[in-house]
Amino acid sequence: MGQTITEKIFAAHLRDTPTPGNMVLDIDVIMCHEITTPIAIMDLMEKGMDRVCDPKRIKAVIDHVTPPKDSKTATQAKIMRDWARRHHIKDFFDIGRNGVCHALFPEKGFIRPGNTVIMGDSHTCTHGAFGAFAAGVGTTDLEVGILKGVCAFRAPKSLKVEVIGTLPKGVVAKDIILNVIKQLTVGGGTDMVIEFCGPVIDAMNMASRMTLCNMAVEAGATSGVCQPDLVTARYLWPFIKDEYQSPEDAAASFAKWRSDPDASYERMLTVDVTTLAPQVTFGYKPDNVKDIGEMEGSRIDQVYIGSCTNGRIEDLREAAAVVQGKAIADSVRAILVPATPAIYSQALEEGLIKIFMDSGFCVLNPTCGACLGMSSGVLADGEVCASTTNRNFNGRMGKGGMVHLMSPASAAAAAITGAITDPRRFLH
Image (cartoon, rainbow, N blue to C red; front, side, top):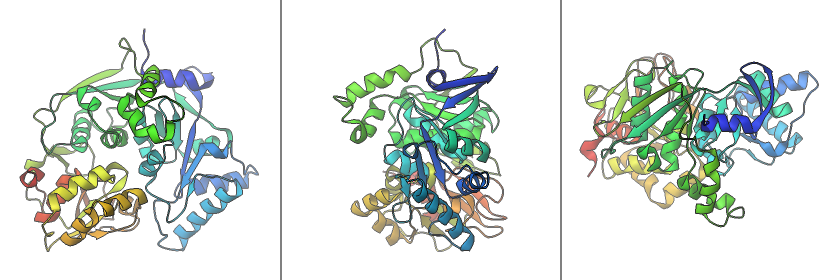
């Protein structure tokens, strides 16, 4: 019997099996941000164990509320900053160099196929796009990871999602993952790794693959993963060019992590996207999903384009293609948040920032901010946001607020009309 990519990664990193079905893994990359990590840092300090397993394996950033909005968030940032200095953590990204963690860390080349990755953040699954096992963990597991460089997981089960067909114009990775979550439901992937494969995935760039894996957790999955290939190798090439003769050589090496043809899966789902329409959520669960035509005309108060799901340069280009030469509706406020300084800089060079500002968007510095209702676009009671983020829980973006999840093009179309709108009417 063959192995899935996740089974191969677990086998290669196995430190111990303390009880049947439970596996302690060596962790390659331990990621930290200022919301969950300070709790772990303070607890380790109180226990007299203020140490790190290996400063080179730790990647840290201030990203959720940046710059700080009050004394509490400033204190959280200070705890991170002092800790990074104390332990000589070179890969610490403070204000000015920081960005949304799940966009910044891939951009820095920190993830490799076959890696194990943890962070005190549920959307750590984003990094599975590189053919890695990446999972969000709780504070206790994060503490152990920081201190010992290990983490315990259940033996992996995999759910295979094969995406086939021809992707229609105006339909993108965000629409695919929303439709997949609709089919699986929010609990359909519980205790499993969703493995995305098929010709549509093979044709995707890394940004699209990251969007897919980012939202695997919204179906209850531990992580999402894509098979590493030449696309992966080309994205990573600036960071691995001294290790391989060519991207093709790197891709051939990465092939050892690909799932075997005879691997066993807990469940399999085939999704044909040929007739898929742009998708949008309703209600307060990520599996409450409809074709956008069914929600056409539903009013909105705010548009938010950004986040670790859809704040990359490809997403900004997609949205700019819709808003170029148009003004946002008088009834709407629109917010654009490039996910990293490099993305912001590239958007400036390409003229995208001007397109958004000319249309009436407020452009902010890289931050998670409004995605979790902490700053930079929080909703008031009764307000509605068309958002490219990843969660629509009740109160997620502000107490009493409603969030409709959608693609960057769909969010841009809503900004222009003031209501949920099929973006294909604006695409030529």
